[in-house]
Image (cartoon, rainbow, N blue to C red; front, side, top):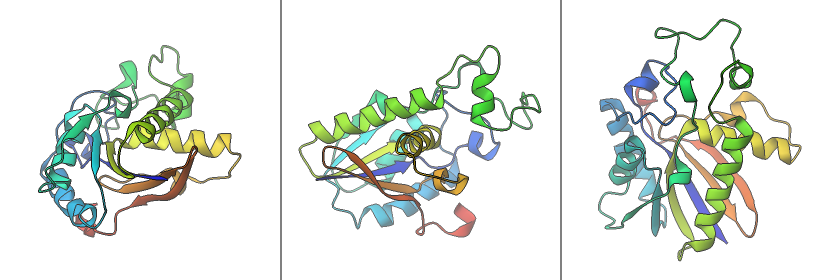
Length: 203
């Protein structure tokens, strides 16, 4: 059985400004770097032998900081990248605000001209990537660094396809939190959004 520890990247300025980042390549801010160092205190307790990361720099740097001293290469996996929001990237409450009737990602997907990934598309892509990594990895304990939007999309897709009721709290993934999955021919959710190692001011 493989265990996949999925680490969301640390905070960026776009996170702080509540902008949709998507596949835009934004950098960690000071808080994000600090979060990654705190995440390292937890990652150090895990028997991780292989590291995989989204190609976006905020994920790669988070992975490098959180595994510093392990002397393990970071394998870049395109399928771990953030959900693509198309022309709606860089929208937010105080910059290019969305129309008032758009409250959720489901509303966004219905908007005329939406050219990004739907929740189902992003969820299926992420699931496929997790399975591919689990099946090719030589080790049983893996660290994957990814993004909040695509992890949430996968969780929604998983709960819906398994007919499991869920609330917003079940698909909330804070910056630099770890969600744990196992793979034994099928993916199983073990823990979502663990971040007890972060100080309240760092969340």
